[in-house]
Length: 340
Image 1 (cartoon, rainbow, N blue to C red):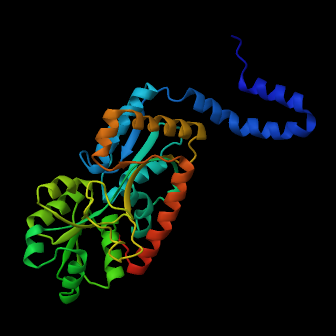
Image 2 (image 1 turned 30 degrees about the horizontal axis):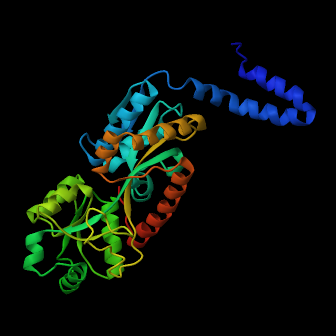
Image 3 (image 1 turned 60 degrees about the vertical axis):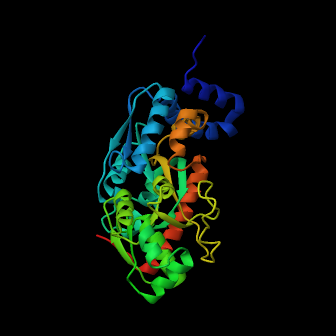
């Protein structure tokens, strides 16, 4: 089969459409040619997937599943590179500085993209520094309490929690994976909606905060799906979920909005992004291949233990990031949260 190069095709098209169309075709060929060629040849070497959290973390667990599927489909190793530190700032900043050639990807959570740059003074990146590829997973938070504390203080529902907090300002302690974390801001929003005062205790990880609630060191926290096994065996008591609809896994646990705390619709998501400027062909290819996770029963089952598998195209993902960036910005400004 005869090969016709990209430049030759452009010249032929220009001659065919005449002088009027030649300028437009030339512009299209000039701007699209290199990207198209790069997209066509990609990938021809290993790909690095930066995860800005430690190995074994919630986000890392998802990254391992996704990277394995990408490796199989692309025919090149997709290597998970954990770059933890500063609540995700270090790894995300490194991804933002990477060459936009499709060989560096970022798999991270919603806090690191829509919140960190607004609360940390030392943050040196913004959402615009990335090309969203796809949402991978999302899950609501579960408002949990220590069962013994709940029973002792007759706190079996969210109204009970609000009543107790109103009677004992600042006596209820809640935990999160660090200052400015989405779980921290979600509880700050709950405080604002219900006019109560509670005390935030930051931990190094969500797992540590969860352990603190189980041990009685903390009274409550917004937890992730990792709480489900502990809820099942009675080590944590669920009071509500943060989404607009109930969780299938906890059908008897109401949403906060059902309880009159509205608006309150918060989900914790994990998504894949690339450095801004990555050729659209590569972004589209990554999205299409990642959707293959939905068709792999083993991968879907593994991800399903962490949250709901939800994949949307890059344009829809970009709009979601923009919307959440603005809404969290309002919470951060209202609460006056700023960190070094």
